[in-house]
Length: 214
Ligand code: 0O2
Ligand code: 0O2
Image: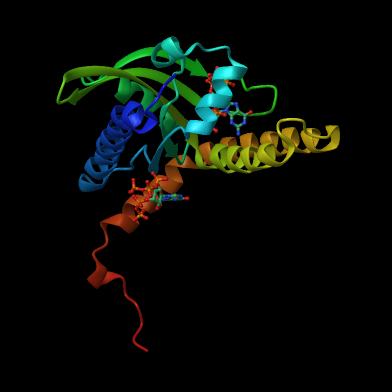
């Protein structure tokens, strides 16, 4: 039995915190250079203990195998404006020397039957503890804002229906996923125009925004 979950999860919390800071740092650097950032925002969480226990039962994970077999105890999510940004982020992550990519799962080219789309990367990340270095597995999910919108809503419905959606709802969710996919494609078509406008806007200093006096 894992007797002290708080103790067990501490290095995972450290991993999530460090990854959030590092990934948000990428966005800051693009902003500093007034370039379009492929990262819109970053969130992260340590999987709640109840979800860990539930997944251990569902996936037949033995407690002594938990660290190796449950890859998403530490999870960070990177949201992007455009599908193209996702692949740029993946390239950035592949070049980093502070983490090792173990697995990549492309649920964008291969959407899940539910309609779920995202790019998943499993990394091994070294955290420095007072007892020395520990290599922690973490899952990075990279998705567009539209994919995130769909996944967030589908996830909350999942809680209500415990994954057993009525057929009609399931079909509607699949159609909604298609619509989100179309939205992403439409946005990609006008990406250059959008980015030009965003760069122009971010170049303006507060003083020259020409806000009329009241
Ligand atoms: P700001 O100034 O609000 O943008 P923490 O790691 O403590 O900073 P926390 O509470 O752990 O944040 O939350 P989490 O879930 O890791 O990340 C939430 C961050 O995502 C917040 O940023 C939200 O503002 C940001 N966020 C959530 N939804 C959106 C969205 O639709 N668009 C954008 N641009 N950002 C979003 P911060 O870091 O708290 O700062
Ligand atoms: P959370 O923290 O509630 O998000 P498995 O859990 O067995 O399906 P596996 O093989 O370990 O998954 O990894 P996979 O499929 O690469 O990633 C699982 C995670 O992807 C899920 O975590 C979700 O965050 C997300 N995901 C996968 N499929 C769907 C889906 O159909 N809808 C939504 N909304 N999210 C999905 P968890 O375990 O659900 O945890």
